Amino acid sequence: MPERVVIVGSGPAGWTAAIYASRASLEPLVFEGAVTEENRLQGTMPLGQLALTTEVENYPGFPAGDLSQFLKTALPEEHHWMVDMHQKEGCSGPELMHLMRQQATNFGTRIVTDDIVDIDFDCRPFKIRSLGGQEVEAHSIIIATGARANYLGLDSEEQFKNRGVSACAVCDGALPRFRDKPLVVVGGGDSAVEEADYLSKFASTVYLVHRRDELRASKIMAERAIENPKIEILWNSQVTEVLGTDDDGVTGVRLKSTVDGSEREQAASGAFMAIGHTPNTTFLEGKLEMTEKKYVKWTVPFRTNTSVEGVFAAGDVSDDYYRQAITAAGTGCMSALDAERWLALKGL
Ligand code: NAP
Image (tube, rainbow, N blue to C red; front, top):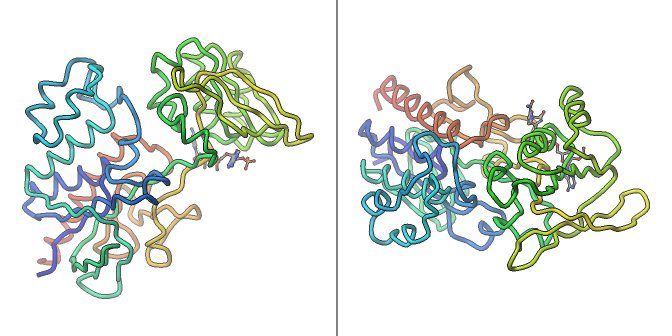
């Protein structure tokens, strides 16, 4: 029997779609991703980007407070290790993802811990193949594989992730370790300027490190950075190493001039990478309509429909603009409602 809806991906979009689809009695099957070294290295493990962050202070419904008793009752015993790690400040990214996953399973969602490597959209029902070789047929599919932040690819950057190296100022910027300290933002696009501007509310100085002598950001955004007295732009500079210690995390960065190759160190308590994102759509290339940057295109305004009827997309895989947990959850909900209505229309 073909599945009625298969959900690919396990971030806030995937789990919200699963919660809605399971409550609509569609018995969704979620492929949450595989636990592989390749996925670990590129930041595409199950539970998505939020599982790589620390505190989440902007997801509505989780104000600061002690969640540990709630976690104990909400999560099965095998996940009680989280209770001991709980920071007593709102909710952490991994906690939020485990809670969403649990909520989806409470309503009957089934989960396979594997990646999807191929989908045949030319046949009905669609044919789906996983990395482990499992083959599944589905009348409808929700793509929620998200995107991954680009990093510079330095070993030292990897070493200090979550201890000063971040790719999300909105997620991490307000943490105590960054307050009234010098911070570095890498990049020259709108994201980098926006991150620098946001961080300037907390930091003593934000050093915006850009590899050229002109920002890529739009004029209005570039002016905002140039005019902000707390932002100093370090032109023609490339970060070649993140500096730090086991005790303190990030303490600075080593910079190399892209003009004359000279090197210097810049003290900083944090290094924020804002050099773009890559959507996780390789397995969809040539099969679904995508934007120039390979994000899945929504083909109907304010709906999650894609170029293939019966296939819907939710979360960061189809959004390079908002990229927030709450917006991903919102479009995840929309995709489940869209799939449910489409299945009903087709009598499936
Ligand atoms: P982006 O426009 O692609 O900019 C990426 C920046 O990172 C560029 O300045 C690039 O340098 C730099 N970069 C890339 N790889 C690098 C590397 N290995 N080392 C050092 N620097 C590197 O990406 P984005 O800023 O994330 O923006 C994405 C899209 O979202 C854009 O269309 C943007 O307009 C939009 N956006 C809009 C807003 C807003 O309107 N409020 C906010 C955020 C994003 P080069 O310039 O030298 O290539």
